[in-house]
Length: 89
Image 1 (cartoon, rainbow, N blue to C red):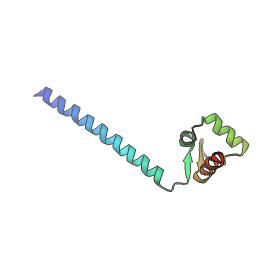
Image 2: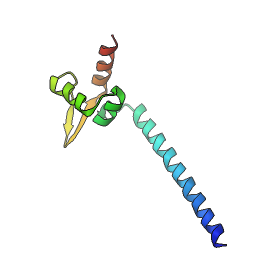
Image 3: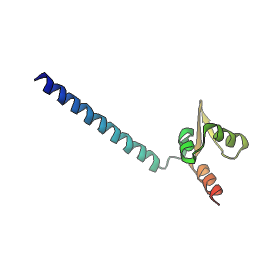
Image 4: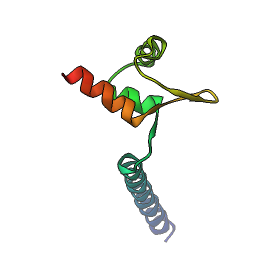
């Protein structure tokens, strides 16, 4: 009987982990699709496929405007889109 309970608990934990991952995916998609104007630096790096050092260079040159909140750097969605479009041309 104990081994049966152990299996049930293991299965329940596996289902819980799947549910958590699904919720995380839904939340991430909601944030992406929402009209949130400011994007964190790490996400901009992923979008542009650039390292933090390259993003810093763009900030320093004034190529990519940004805002700092505490020790976090954020970029406006419009500025990121403008950079993408200017490099695509």
